[in-house]
Amino acid sequence: MTAKECIKGRRSIRKFTNQPIDHSLLEEIIETASYAPSWKHTQIARYIAVEGELKDRIADECTNDYPHNGTIIKRAPMLIVVTIIKARSGYERDGSFSTIRGDGWQMYDAGVASQTFCLAAYEKGIGSVIEGIFDEAKIAQMLDVPPEREVVALIPIGYPDEAPVAPRRKPVEELLTYK
Ligand SMILES: Cc1cc2nc3c(=O)[nH]c(=O)nc-3n(C[C@H](O)[C@H](O)[C@H](O)COP(=O)(O)O)c2cc1C
Image (cartoon, rainbow, N blue to C red; front, top):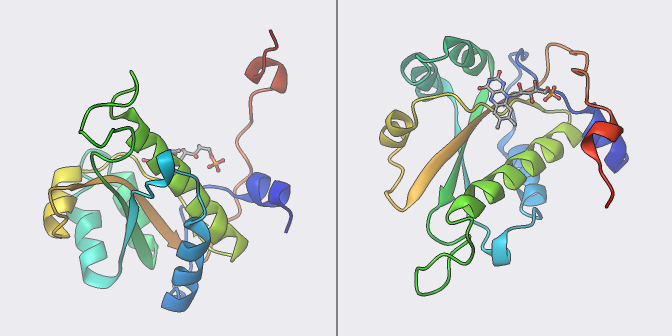
């Protein structure tokens, strides 16, 4: 698979087969995803893999604002909870912000890491969807996420049971300007 095939072929997958994901395969995907770039190579992304009853409890109790996300999590054999270590990316050693972007760089890094993870998973035949609407505080409590870390995204993963058509993309003329 070329990089272009990987980038263009990946879709958000919201229906999965019952086939579980081998932990060795997940570890291979995480190792590939670890090559994502990050602010001053701070590598703040941490992934929590949740399966079984606990996963279903997250689906039931932490997606009330958007129950569709809970339905997707229930269909998936595994849920990846993306967390970050706070106050590193975008910060100087003395705790001050490096730029006017403030702590925004840590979310930037989380996004770069999440997409790299999804592409690495796709290359191995694993479907995924990044979810942004969920009860962050409740998940942190259920998973004992320590206060120096923050839950930033959920990524249900599994073997795809659908092959959605790519939503239309904006044309290059709209995306790119030259000066
Ligand atoms: C930051 C972010 C948050 C998202 N949140 C959700 C979500 O809560 N639920 C969902 O079903 N899809 C979610 N998506 C998936 C988008 O809807 C999807 O990427 C978009 O429709 C394009 O489709 P594609 O990923 O198949 O190219 C999210 C994607 C991103 C990048």
